[in-house]
Image (cartoon, rainbow, N blue to C red; front, side):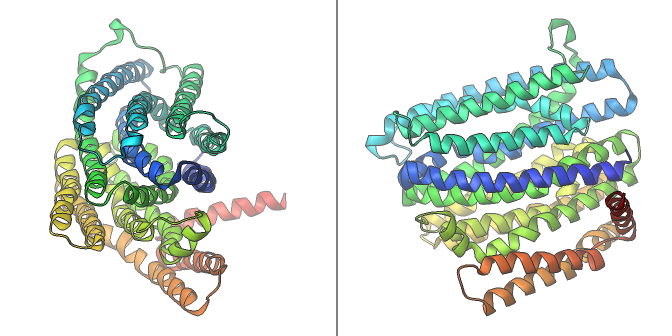
Length: 508
């Protein structure tokens, strides 16, 4: 199959998976919030908030392993692929174990009057903490198997597993009604079961399907590969710490200043953003293998072209749904939840907008992963993200409104996104004019069309079903604007050829 056709098919598969996951995830949250209550859900968000950024952590680790596996496939070196996978699995076990040690070491500090938890819920919260640490460990172990699937561009199987994951989360939400156990503990245990299910299904399939997927032993340890992977993983850990420090640091700050109920609103914001982020992630999973193979084959120009496509279309895919969501957020939350926690609209809008500005240059992050210059990149980009925490400390300490916290979050996300450009100019000879013309310039007209249509529709229509018109009309106009104003010549040719083949198949 031609690479462009494979990318389109894989993107569609992942996009459909993302849409289904959004539906199941939002239904599950509605039920869970009702069963647990605002306070317990806020506690879960605070303690298990690490889960909300697991997708970012896992994606980073998957890309690290996938980079080496894709290069090996380009070299057609099966033995090297086996060694890379085996050493990667060993490394993930070490990292997972290290994370458990760190989090369990922090356990006494967090629960000795640091977290603002009601006395009656302390015991359940402590049990939940240990469960979440276990979930995190199994998530790390799953990463090499996801990397195998993506490197072979087997996005369909991965989409199926991820969809089953979301269906199971909806099932356990309803199971909470009938379980005779502390609801908070029961929810944590059921989430642990789902993560174990994911690990078993991914690993079993990969061991059966792919020859390079084999259990490592002492003889399979290769110090050279382990050192290279360790370097990547080490700096990925810095990425992890910065993301975790920012996300959970702000969560703890909000808890300290405003109590556990505010964590519910904060957690809902990340859940909405995470669900929508899966739409753009569908494209990244489809393009990254081709991007990595292009760099492995020594074609830097082709690799950077893929990075442009990733940045532009990731923004298009996310903004198509995110911008209507921003405008209709109060109505959507009212329809979704029985009782909308205070500040939920503010946090949801903030995190969605932050994700949008990050997607402006997200392809350059994948390009840097392909090149392998991870140390300097992570130090610059993720340190900027981490500085958000210090800005929020100052804002809350000085007694400013939560609005300023949200503004700071978006500003630092935008700054880190912009900083990718000069970094890639310096390290990869990125052509700024070409990137600007192929990405930013092509996004302007479609985005104005989307924004204007949302403003007009929300201003002219005032009823409980308005969101249907906002989403339907604005997305249709956006698609037309993207086709006529947002595509480069080669991109339009690929889409036209796919449409022609699709019409022929329908006629036959």
